[in-house]
Image (tube, rainbow, N blue to C red):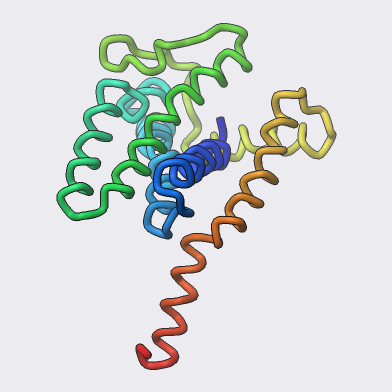
Length: 195
């Protein structure tokens, strides 16, 4: 999945959870935490594999269930002790939803469910060849994606993902545009001298 697809799934899941459990829209810090956490496995693994060659493929430490679960628990405990349990829940939900998202994506792209991408260091994903670097690899993959998108050559799976973009935008607006809302409030406080 693309990073924005992970972010959308994470945000939608946390927004639903926030409305069902807390009966309120996500706050800015919660929205930031869920979006950041939902892309964090890729922020960790893709540069380490594609740019620095530390891992053979872009599925290693960040995508490992052996790191994801303890990290979610640790961040949750820190957030709880800081009096921000919702931020911990948002982080954990975003990070942990990234993993099944990638497993489903491997099924879509390759026709098989690959749990091995979640089992580093017990099981490692083999290299697909020498990577020309993070920027070049991203540019190559995004170029293919964009070309298919502009040509309208997307299967129903990708059209559904694009539909999620619209749904997420509407939900985010319904939630009061968290993060942007807090930034605007902060700017108003600065301009008005904190009144």
